[in-house]
Image (cartoon, rainbow, N blue to C red; front, side, top):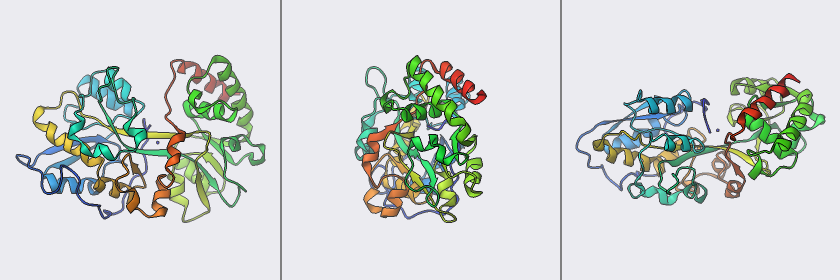
Length: 360
């Protein structure tokens, strides 16, 4: 789930066993006095139980400031209306505008040694760097937007082309979102994932034809993940492009599974960033928190409670095979198929196509 205005699954369970404190070595960090760190993040990423080990080690309190949308986060940083934020949460694909907008501080990577444990696909990304190669954000949490499907209805694991198959007319659902839906049509008609978000006018026209042909096959275009979950629960939908939420909500009640199409997997990734105006006396604590997000304690808690994976493999081998599968790290080759949705320069044309598809 890049997560824009997405509020991912709220976690209510208790604290999972951590894998040992990892921030600034062992023992209590020598900050002058307990202080407060305000973390602007999504409600699924930040809970008291997720940050308790950090608070215990440093003596600092982490205040959680939940975001409503990435657009609002960027605007608040740009206008200076969120001067109390000490840590912010740009998306991997949205980091470029924060960097160009001058609202993030250039990071000193040496102050976050847990970066060494990051998976290469995140460690090597240029999406968090400026043109000179300086780093302004660190990917820390990620996930996939899979196909959710009923294993007792479909005879085999679905692909994106399943969403265009007349055999399942009336049982399919797509998200009401031009960017992802048009890209899925592109993959369906054979356009490689490297070009799925940079379509030519002719390719965009072919995607439009495919989506218009698909429309009578759909039960709905879903707008909220709660609505889609209910459609699965009532048996009205048996396969859909989705977030993982319906699977988590229904896996103990009905036969559902998640598919990761080989053609390309839509991913989301959240990043750690420091506002450009953060006071110098808070920098040490901010870096310690960034390091913590890549450490074992946060990774263990959010895997066990929230069913999400951090960008570090630090606890991977300590998780059960079932948990690894649930958070998509059982088979790391999946990372070779990542697609990070990015609106193209001609996105207004995409929106026009999407409006014409829905009106057809």
